Image (cartoon, rainbow, N blue to C red; front, side, top):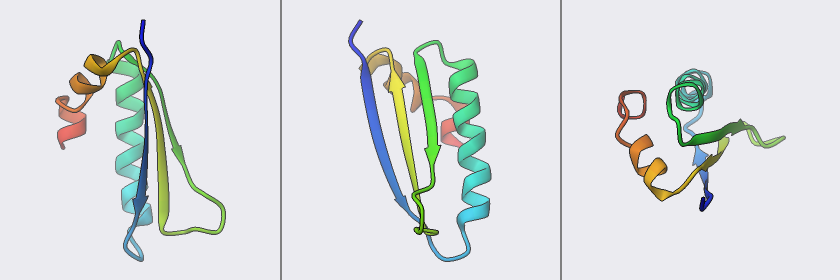
Length: 76
């Protein structure tokens, strides 16, 4: 098994954090619960950076990540 990890760094518009956080938290929960190849999906908030959200995701392999990007919860 070849692990595949990604790090996504979002810079948000002022005032968008609450709405974005609700959407990304739903995506993270759905990914871990419904995708066999998604092993971890963390949503991180760096201290002192209110306009920044970082995602840390681990998949079984690149194919599992590619499948993630085609799911309904990712596309919506």
